[in-house]
Image (cartoon, rainbow, N blue to C red; front, side):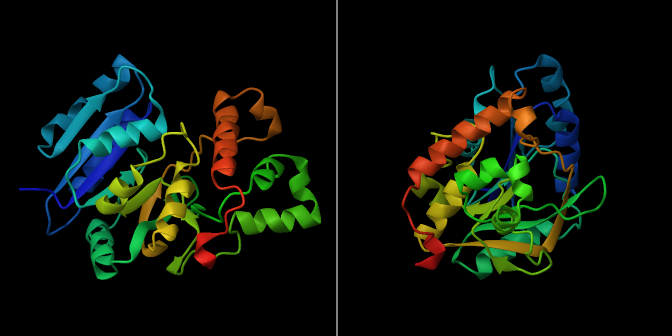
Length: 273
């Protein structure tokens, strides 16, 4: 039977958490068939071996990449193997929580056909806080400023807070500029229309780019806190200006941010149209 939904989990050295992720997913109560596609980007035999317990699930497929092909290509490769009408991009650290969460997400997508991207509330493991997964469309200067002491200047602090949606009511379902792709539900017809995540990016910025295209195509991006999932709260892009010179991933973040800026230069926020 053809799956209604396909869950793509891209792993990078989080194999144990991936197994917990899938196990919690399998305890979900749904009235439709689904498949899980795990793509391992770790290029590490030991990490791959730890994914072996997933073989007990008939609707789970695991693909091991010989090298790290990046977040964008890794997810695109997973979706190419998927058959579902709905595509879920799910980080490896996610735990699904309430047993009806999966059903609620798909029900909401079917209820409102103008939703292009739907994301649940995420709760951080360590302190139970709500993860800030909602953002305003990126501005390169603010992305740089918030990693420096400039973010403490009153005027910049105001704009950084607005950019990070710090005043957002995270308990209210609402339309937003974009959602971090740590947990997404989107439609295959949109995914195919956009050609998946934009290949010009390696790790970052493909999610605001995709949400921008969703709004431009007449589809909403919706934050949906009626569904709550759990995450480990560890952000790969965490760090300030000093970390920038030590961590390759932060330098890659800047590269992707510059590519995004050029791609959307002089374009108006599509939500304002």
